[in-house]
Structures are given as structure tokens and as C-alpha cells.
Image: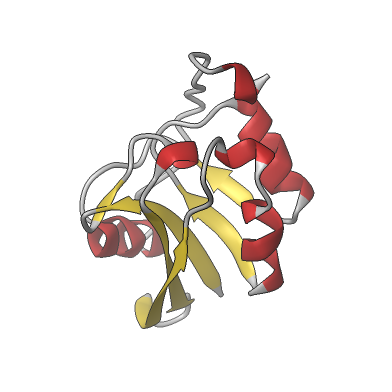
Length: 118
């Protein structure tokens, strides 16, 4: 399984649409471990109006662990087959491992500050 994390300096970026890059972890859910790591460049501008959801879906991403994200971005990702869990913060690997342990769930927090999220 592949999970994506909006990233900035090895931390979850607070805002999906303006992250520096996406970290993609291939994980083994049964053994609760990260088995491969790669990065995908972030598009310029607002994430929900870019092709990033399709790009991530095309490489097999099925889950995004994110900080804050607008409903528009959640819908675009969901429509590309990517589940979204919001409210994550901190070190990328720590967040991914906590999710594998079942400690992280969606906060439901939505960002309403930018027009591209409507």
C-alpha cells in the first residue's frame, strides 16, 4: 500500500496545497513497517486545482495523511481513489508509523481560507 504525506523539511506540511513535495511511503500493513520511500514534486499553485491527485493515484497512492486541507481538495483526492486523513503533524515517518499502529484518525478539520478550496 502507498501513502502520501504533504511535506516540508521532513515534516507534515500544514497545508496540502502549498507543500514543498509529497513523500510517498510504501507500507506493509501486516508488519506495520515502511518498506520504501520516494518523493513527488508538488505542483505550483493550489493543490486542489492541479493534477496532483491523479498523479498520486497513477502511482498507486490510496491514502493521504495530511495536516489541514479544504473540502475541495478532499473531494478531488477522494474522486481519484485516495482516502484523506486530516489533522496530522510532525515527523513524516513517525506519523506514518502511528497510522500503521491505528493511532491516527481523521480530525475532520477543513481549511476555508483560500478560494481554491470551494
